Image (cartoon, rainbow, N blue to C red; front, side, top):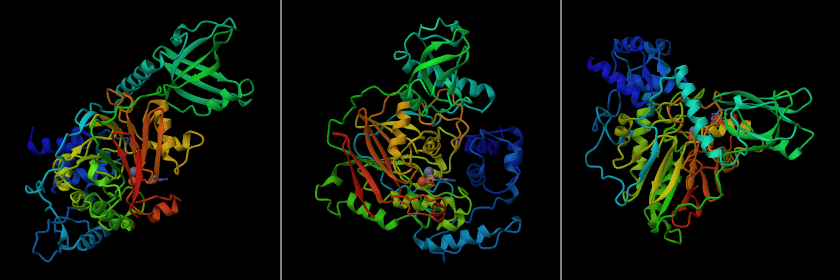
Length: 532
Ligand code: D5M
Ligand code: FE
Ligand code: ZN
């Protein structure tokens, strides 16, 4: 295989995509740097895509080349006029240049082949985090029909195993007989449809590997059960206990059982140590709160007294995604961007992260603004982005992933599915993200709904199933703080370091920025530190 092909394939694989042979040929014909092109494609392609096809490359001729790397000592200006072989000069070019000017001469690592500076001291002096599970480098899916069948079967089997002890008189769907009007049976199924009859009763269609069967929740018979059934959502796996009708065509439901977590005794660290939970830094946005960030750094370094010497015990900093603001994430984002080049955003993010004292372990997981496959589970940031970030010693994981910090298992997930779940489950809101995270724990699934805003990559194993039970569950994405305990699990949404953007103002999203939750790994108590 020609090395250029290998490079293209590798770059896409790092970002969690496969490339069709036809696309490979088109990309080969592009004369700019492959990594730049791949990043642009990755950040713009629809998240539901698993294989890059020629139709995804229609704008390829319009992809601009990245600005020439700046060398320190130069006047900081890069080539404003595109080279003669570059026919298209859009508005973005000019903006990119002015964005670069704003960073002045302070640009840290040079962009280029590796970008890595050898003399940067590595993070993490003590016990290292242990990655318990993570999709990174294990993606197997191509996104074909069979992959989805296999994926949902795996979801079903894994949640079945959790549910089976709690659903009495279990029966596979094909073995349901005509009822005698008394005898109860239990079904475990994936919710394939939810509908309301013309009389207002609810019908939940359940699927297992042997067939499909409707369960009826009568709105007049049991108010409590009917209310409970409002929380049933598409594609989750639940148990329903009830009595089959006399003709064997429907199940009259008496109870709904979620896989939920049992009352749980969490692991605790043996030695004193804290984990600082961050997310949604959004470097590159005009709204990134650099002053608040610097206050947090000053606290971490012991330059601001918190009265309790908390900073000394911080052993880990976990970032749950949206390190940078990215490009092209929402309509009109250019207007919100102080740095309009995504590589430069990562360079700056690296500078901010390198201000963190080196004694801590830095754990970095991606979000929907980062340059990586958008379909979940998201793999870790790819190698060339890590090189630009240049924070040696950091542990890069996917989203979700389970990481053990001094024996405490923390489930890190950006939180995109919160958008879908808030819309689907009654009583949820952006101001209380911990409640929605608890709904994920109850369903033992990070992102049950298929085909809504979150797109799911049909991996061989459903990495989105919550098993084993985490000690701490950490999300971000919604830019609001939420801290709670649920049956022994510590639930934290770590907010953001970005104040309200114009887009968020239009969408009526009220962020709570510059608050950092700090988890004591010995007691699992959470303090929230305010840096605004
Ligand atoms: O998401 C930040 C917040 O903004 C999060 O609460 C979701 C919300 N959001 C993001 N995009 C949209 C759209 N298109 N509609 C409604 N709400 C949205 P972040 O991913 O960090 O930018
Ligand atoms: Fe965000
Ligand atoms: Zn996000």
